[in-house]
Length: 265
Ligand code: DGL
Image (tube, rainbow, N blue to C red; front, side, top):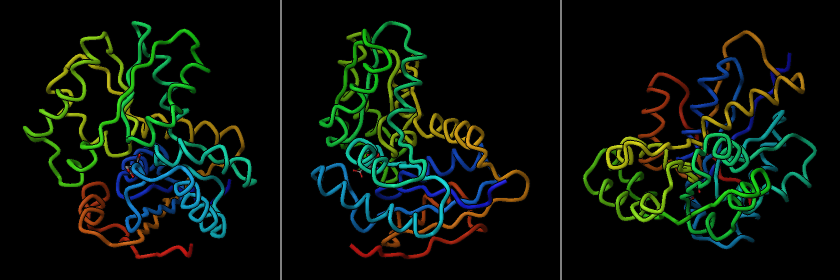
Protein backbone atom coordinates (compact mmCIF):
# COMPACT_ATOMS: atom_id res chain seq x y z
CA UNK A 1 0.00 0.00 0.00
CA UNK A 2 1.32 3.42 -1.01
CA UNK A 3 -0.61 6.51 0.06
CA UNK A 4 1.60 9.03 -1.73
CA UNK A 5 -0.52 11.14 -4.11
CA UNK A 6 -0.78 10.94 -7.88
CA UNK A 7 0.25 14.19 -9.57
CA UNK A 8 -1.89 15.34 -12.51
CA UNK A 9 -1.27 18.48 -14.50
CA UNK A 10 -2.74 20.38 -17.41
CA UNK A 11 -2.54 23.76 -19.10
CA UNK A 12 -5.78 24.74 -17.38
CA UNK A 13 -9.28 23.49 -16.74
CA UNK A 14 -9.52 20.72 -19.33
CA UNK A 15 -7.40 18.29 -17.31
CA UNK A 16 -10.22 18.16 -14.79
CA UNK A 17 -11.87 15.74 -17.25
CA UNK A 18 -8.86 13.44 -16.78
CA UNK A 19 -8.77 14.06 -13.03
CA UNK A 20 -12.45 13.13 -12.80
CA UNK A 21 -11.96 9.95 -14.84
CA UNK A 22 -9.06 8.89 -12.56
CA UNK A 23 -11.02 9.80 -9.45
CA UNK A 24 -14.02 7.74 -10.61
CA UNK A 25 -11.91 4.68 -11.39
CA UNK A 26 -9.53 4.95 -8.42
CA UNK A 27 -11.46 6.64 -5.59
CA UNK A 28 -8.99 5.67 -2.87
CA UNK A 29 -6.01 7.37 -4.50
CA UNK A 30 -4.86 10.76 -3.20
CA UNK A 31 -4.51 13.30 -6.01
CA UNK A 32 -2.75 16.63 -6.48
CA UNK A 33 -4.03 18.45 -9.58
CA UNK A 34 -2.40 21.56 -11.04
CA UNK A 35 -4.00 23.59 -13.86
CA UNK A 36 -1.80 26.32 -15.34
CA UNK A 37 -4.69 28.72 -15.99
CA UNK A 38 -2.39 31.76 -15.83
CA UNK A 39 -0.35 30.60 -18.84
CA UNK A 40 -3.22 28.89 -20.71
CA UNK A 41 -3.46 28.08 -23.60
CA UNK A 42 -0.44 25.89 -24.36
CA UNK A 43 -1.75 24.84 -27.77
CA UNK A 44 -0.63 28.01 -29.52
CA UNK A 45 2.85 28.16 -27.92
CA UNK A 46 6.21 26.89 -29.16
CA UNK A 47 7.43 23.43 -28.21
CA UNK A 48 10.32 24.91 -26.17
CA UNK A 49 7.92 26.98 -24.09
CA UNK A 50 5.60 24.03 -23.46
CA UNK A 51 8.61 21.91 -22.39
CA UNK A 52 9.76 24.65 -19.98
CA UNK A 53 6.29 25.02 -18.40
CA UNK A 54 5.91 21.25 -18.13
CA UNK A 55 9.29 20.89 -16.39
CA UNK A 56 8.45 23.62 -13.88
CA UNK A 57 5.19 21.88 -12.96
CA UNK A 58 6.87 18.46 -12.80
CA UNK A 59 9.51 19.93 -10.43
CA UNK A 60 6.72 21.14 -8.17
CA UNK A 61 4.84 17.82 -8.18
CA UNK A 62 8.06 15.87 -7.60
CA UNK A 63 8.84 18.16 -4.63
CA UNK A 64 5.42 17.17 -3.19
CA UNK A 65 6.47 13.52 -3.20
CA UNK A 66 4.00 12.18 -5.78
CA UNK A 67 4.36 8.50 -6.72
CA UNK A 68 3.45 9.00 -10.38
CA UNK A 69 2.71 11.90 -12.74
CA UNK A 70 -0.09 11.99 -15.31
CA UNK A 71 0.42 14.59 -18.01
CA UNK A 72 -3.27 15.23 -18.67
CA UNK A 73 -2.58 17.91 -21.26
CA UNK A 74 -2.35 16.62 -24.82
CA UNK A 75 -0.16 19.55 -25.86
CA UNK A 76 2.32 18.90 -23.01
CA UNK A 77 2.22 15.17 -23.69
CA UNK A 78 3.00 15.82 -27.35
CA UNK A 79 5.80 18.29 -26.68
CA UNK A 80 7.37 17.29 -23.38
CA UNK A 81 6.60 13.72 -22.33
CA UNK A 82 9.79 12.15 -23.70
CA UNK A 83 11.97 14.82 -22.05
CA UNK A 84 10.19 14.47 -18.71
CA UNK A 85 10.45 10.66 -18.78
CA UNK A 86 14.20 10.92 -19.31
CA UNK A 87 14.78 13.53 -16.62
CA UNK A 88 12.67 12.34 -13.68
CA UNK A 89 13.02 9.02 -11.88
CA UNK A 90 9.32 8.30 -11.38
CA UNK A 91 6.60 6.88 -13.62
CA UNK A 92 5.30 9.63 -15.93
CA UNK A 93 2.57 8.93 -18.46
CA UNK A 94 0.82 11.06 -21.03
CA UNK A 95 -2.53 10.91 -22.74
CA UNK A 96 -1.27 10.32 -26.27
CA UNK A 97 -0.13 6.74 -25.87
CA UNK A 98 -3.36 5.78 -24.08
CA UNK A 99 -5.51 7.44 -26.76
CA UNK A 100 -3.53 5.90 -29.60
CA UNK A 101 -3.72 2.43 -28.07
CA UNK A 102 -7.50 2.64 -27.66
CA UNK A 103 -7.90 3.91 -31.22
CA UNK A 104 -5.83 1.06 -32.68
CA UNK A 105 -7.85 -1.49 -30.71
CA UNK A 106 -11.18 -0.01 -31.75
CA UNK A 107 -10.59 1.18 -35.32
CA UNK A 108 -12.70 -0.98 -37.56
CA UNK A 109 -12.00 0.43 -41.01
CA UNK A 110 -8.21 0.90 -40.94
CA UNK A 111 -8.58 4.67 -40.49
CA UNK A 112 -8.38 6.78 -37.34
CA UNK A 113 -9.20 10.49 -37.01
CA UNK A 114 -7.47 12.80 -34.53
CA UNK A 115 -8.47 16.30 -33.45
CA UNK A 116 -6.42 18.44 -31.08
CA UNK A 117 -4.78 21.83 -30.70
CA UNK A 118 -2.56 23.22 -33.42
CA UNK A 119 0.57 22.32 -31.39
CA UNK A 120 -0.58 18.73 -30.83
CA UNK A 121 -1.45 18.23 -34.50
CA UNK A 122 1.77 19.88 -35.72
CA UNK A 123 3.87 17.71 -33.40
CA UNK A 124 2.65 14.59 -35.26
CA UNK A 125 2.75 12.70 -31.93
CA UNK A 126 -0.54 10.86 -32.39
CA UNK A 127 0.41 9.83 -35.93
CA UNK A 128 3.79 8.50 -34.74
CA UNK A 129 2.29 6.65 -31.80
CA UNK A 130 -0.52 5.09 -33.87
CA UNK A 131 1.97 3.99 -36.54
CA UNK A 132 4.26 2.52 -33.88
CA UNK A 133 1.34 0.41 -32.64
CA UNK A 134 -0.35 -0.25 -36.00
CA UNK A 135 2.02 0.48 -38.89
CA UNK A 136 -0.65 0.14 -41.59
CA UNK A 137 -3.20 2.47 -40.01
CA UNK A 138 -4.36 5.48 -42.01
CA UNK A 139 -4.40 8.56 -39.72
CA UNK A 140 -6.28 11.73 -40.61
CA UNK A 141 -5.78 14.67 -38.26
CA UNK A 142 -6.73 18.31 -38.01
CA UNK A 143 -6.66 20.99 -35.38
CA UNK A 144 -9.99 22.05 -33.89
CA UNK A 145 -8.86 25.14 -32.02
CA UNK A 146 -12.29 26.77 -31.72
CA UNK A 147 -13.56 23.80 -29.72
CA UNK A 148 -11.28 24.96 -26.89
CA UNK A 149 -12.90 28.43 -26.76
CA UNK A 150 -16.41 26.99 -27.10
CA UNK A 151 -15.79 24.77 -24.10
CA UNK A 152 -14.30 27.62 -22.07
CA UNK A 153 -17.38 29.70 -22.94
CA UNK A 154 -19.62 26.92 -21.61
CA UNK A 155 -21.28 26.39 -25.02
CA UNK A 156 -21.27 22.68 -24.57
CA UNK A 157 -24.73 21.80 -25.86
CA UNK A 158 -25.17 24.61 -28.35
CA UNK A 159 -26.01 25.11 -32.02
CA UNK A 160 -22.75 26.98 -32.64
CA UNK A 161 -20.79 23.99 -31.33
CA UNK A 162 -22.71 21.62 -33.60
CA UNK A 163 -21.93 23.90 -36.56
CA UNK A 164 -18.24 23.90 -35.63
CA UNK A 165 -18.34 20.10 -35.35
CA UNK A 166 -19.75 19.86 -38.87
CA UNK A 167 -17.17 22.28 -40.21
CA UNK A 168 -14.23 20.48 -38.61
CA UNK A 169 -15.33 16.89 -39.05
CA UNK A 170 -17.51 16.50 -42.17
CA UNK A 171 -14.55 15.99 -44.49
CA UNK A 172 -13.00 13.37 -42.21
CA UNK A 173 -16.34 11.61 -41.88
CA UNK A 174 -16.90 11.60 -45.66
CA UNK A 175 -13.37 10.22 -46.01
CA UNK A 176 -14.36 7.19 -43.91
CA UNK A 177 -13.29 8.13 -40.35
CA UNK A 178 -15.53 6.36 -37.82
CA UNK A 179 -13.15 6.33 -34.82
CA UNK A 180 -12.06 9.76 -33.62
CA UNK A 181 -9.51 10.53 -30.90
CA UNK A 182 -10.54 13.56 -28.85
CA UNK A 183 -6.92 14.70 -28.58
CA UNK A 184 -7.43 17.68 -26.29
CA UNK A 185 -8.50 17.73 -22.67
CA UNK A 186 -11.45 20.03 -23.41
CA UNK A 187 -13.03 17.93 -26.13
CA UNK A 188 -14.67 15.20 -24.00
CA UNK A 189 -16.98 17.94 -22.76
CA UNK A 190 -18.25 18.31 -26.32
CA UNK A 191 -19.04 14.62 -26.83
CA UNK A 192 -22.79 15.20 -26.86
CA UNK A 193 -22.64 18.05 -29.40
CA UNK A 194 -20.37 16.00 -31.69
CA UNK A 195 -22.56 12.91 -31.33
CA UNK A 196 -25.66 14.97 -32.20
CA UNK A 197 -24.11 15.69 -35.60
CA UNK A 198 -22.30 12.38 -36.14
CA UNK A 199 -24.18 9.73 -34.13
CA UNK A 200 -22.17 6.77 -35.43
CA UNK A 201 -18.74 8.30 -34.80
CA UNK A 202 -16.87 6.42 -32.05
CA UNK A 203 -15.43 9.18 -29.81
CA UNK A 204 -12.27 8.13 -27.97
CA UNK A 205 -12.00 9.93 -24.63
CA UNK A 206 -8.33 9.97 -23.65
CA UNK A 207 -9.22 10.73 -20.00
CA UNK A 208 -11.03 7.42 -19.61
CA UNK A 209 -8.25 5.57 -21.43
CA UNK A 210 -5.48 7.04 -19.29
CA UNK A 211 -7.39 6.30 -16.09
CA UNK A 212 -7.30 2.61 -17.07
CA UNK A 213 -3.59 2.87 -17.77
CA UNK A 214 -2.91 4.50 -14.39
CA UNK A 215 -4.78 1.67 -12.71
CA UNK A 216 -2.72 -0.97 -14.56
CA UNK A 217 0.61 0.71 -13.75
CA UNK A 218 -0.23 1.16 -10.06
CA UNK A 219 -1.07 -2.55 -9.87
CA UNK A 220 2.03 -3.67 -11.76
CA UNK A 221 4.36 -1.56 -9.61
CA UNK A 222 2.52 -2.27 -6.33
CA UNK A 223 1.84 1.42 -5.84
CA UNK A 224 -1.89 1.17 -5.11
CA UNK A 225 -3.46 2.86 -2.12
CA UNK A 226 -6.06 0.26 -1.19
CA UNK A 227 -8.95 1.21 1.09
CA UNK A 228 -9.59 4.61 2.58
CA UNK A 229 -11.01 7.68 0.95
CA UNK A 230 -8.64 9.53 -1.37
CA UNK A 231 -8.15 13.28 -0.95
CA UNK A 232 -7.96 15.71 -3.85
CA UNK A 233 -5.90 18.88 -3.70
CA UNK A 234 -6.74 21.19 -6.58
CA UNK A 235 -4.43 24.06 -7.57
CA UNK A 236 -4.53 26.59 -10.38
CA UNK A 237 -2.12 29.39 -11.23
CA UNK A 238 -5.07 31.77 -11.67
CA UNK A 239 -8.49 31.33 -10.10
CA UNK A 240 -10.54 32.02 -13.22
CA UNK A 241 -14.33 31.76 -13.43
CA UNK A 242 -13.96 28.84 -15.84
CA UNK A 243 -11.95 26.66 -13.49
CA UNK A 244 -14.29 27.44 -10.59
CA UNK A 245 -17.30 26.55 -12.75
CA UNK A 246 -15.83 23.30 -14.07
CA UNK A 247 -14.60 22.30 -10.66
CA UNK A 248 -18.20 22.58 -9.40
CA UNK A 249 -19.50 20.61 -12.41
CA UNK A 250 -17.08 17.74 -11.75
CA UNK A 251 -16.57 17.69 -8.02
CA UNK A 252 -19.55 19.62 -6.60
CA UNK A 253 -19.30 22.50 -4.16
CA UNK A 254 -18.78 20.54 -0.99
CA UNK A 255 -15.45 18.96 -1.85
CA UNK A 256 -12.02 20.55 -1.79
CA UNK A 257 -11.60 24.14 -2.95
CA UNK A 258 -9.22 25.20 -5.69
CA UNK A 259 -6.23 27.05 -4.28
CA UNK A 260 -4.09 29.54 -6.12
CA UNK A 261 -0.51 28.42 -6.71
CA UNK A 262 1.99 30.20 -8.91
CA UNK A 263 4.90 27.95 -9.76
CA UNK A 264 8.19 29.83 -9.93
CA UNK A 265 9.63 29.86 -13.46
N1 DGL B 1 -4.81 20.95 -22.19
C1 DGL B 1 -4.73 21.45 -23.54
C2 DGL B 1 -4.66 20.24 -24.48
O1 DGL B 1 -5.11 19.15 -24.15
C3 DGL B 1 -5.90 22.36 -23.79
C4 DGL B 1 -5.73 23.38 -24.83
C5 DGL B 1 -4.55 24.35 -24.70
O2 DGL B 1 -3.93 24.50 -23.64
O3 DGL B 1 -4.27 24.99 -25.72
O4 DGL B 1 -4.13 20.33 -25.54
